[in-house]
Amino acid sequence: MRAAILEDRRKLVIRNVPEPVLDKDEVLIKVQYCGICGSDLHVFLEGLRTSLGHEYSGDIVETGKGVEGLEIGDPVVVKPRGCEECYWCKRGEIGLCDKLFLRTTGRNVGAFATYVKAKFDQILKLSDELTHEQGAIIEPTSVALHAVNMSGMKIGDVVAVLGLGPIGQLVARLAKLNAKAVYATETSQTRIELANNVADEVINPKVTDPVDRILELTNDRGADIVFECAGKEETTQDSIAVARKRGTIVIPGMCFEAVETSFIDIVLKELIIKGSLNKNMAEFVSASEIIKKGIIDVNPLLTVKFPLEEIDKAFDKALKGEGGKILVKP
Image (tube, rainbow, N blue to C red):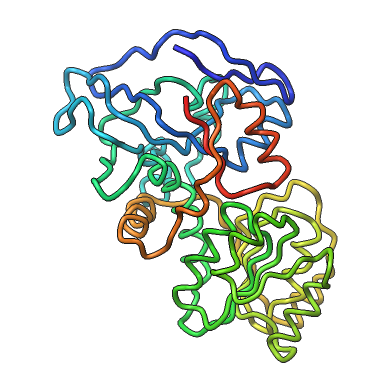
């Protein structure tokens, strides 16, 4: 089978590799679409020895002898799985699994490949109402849903979303379901356009100071909930400035640089700051229902697709911050 292998920093190559060998409780999935995650971009840039591609959908083409309830041809996505042994997994918080990153270390084949295998109890069958493209965005939707759940958002809150990459786009859509207003920031014109019918106003920091504008829009009070989705030093600093007193800041964006700020601002405003890493099983299932029922419309985010042979172009486009969720079709 064919698979994209990361050989070095920014160096992806397509190789012929052996097909996965199934255990009796596993299924073989022919990948239809796999999305590029922000974590994939970090791995790509650093040349880390770990697998790429986990936001995928596909069809079952083979089942192990011990698999029941699944058939060849079933369209599926794969639910998250932890080690099932650590403190967090036993609490149901698989997104905090102690072995979350160790499970992919040393592997070089992910779902940017013809086939992948998975345990049968990880499989979520796609209903007729869901396309394979929509299936591939269930995982990032569950990450966005986790961030919204972490925020403790209430009906009528004013929300700021800083950064409208795929997670920011999904957070804005989910927040809009209950928010009085959603104000967002973004510099990419294509991403601004994707949010025009979602956010009440999108502020381009290259044109307008986002802190001044959000404070103006909220009568100098600030936003009740702020989601920092860009993973940048400046947006992390802005999140503190635009949050109201006793406001909540949730950070699903992954900023690897040190952020210099004055903690006195956090103290004087009595801010609550939460990191948001992943999701749990219930949020993954809920995300699939939200998409299936059309509670949020993800289709505008699914317009950019590349064949596996052009995965380098797909990653280049993702690094430039263009478009919504970029999908690769093996």
